[in-house]
Length: 53
Image (cartoon, rainbow, N blue to C red; front, side, top):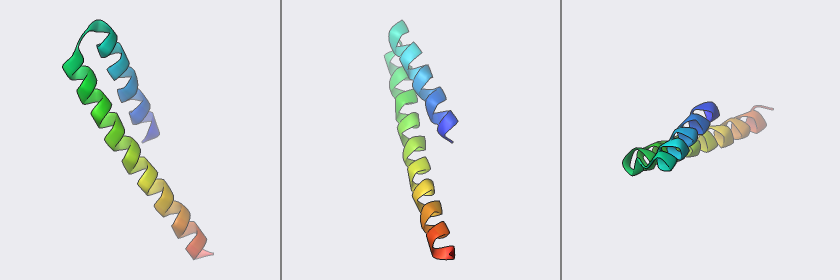
């Protein structure tokens, strides 16, 4: 999931440099959403690991 976030950030940077503002904004927004989903799943897995022991 973190790989997808990095991919979308790179797409956003390249699109921003080339002047495609709409695509850059959309890619950055998608990267933010995926990153927050990753953080939530990571924290949940940490809690699950602590509770399981």
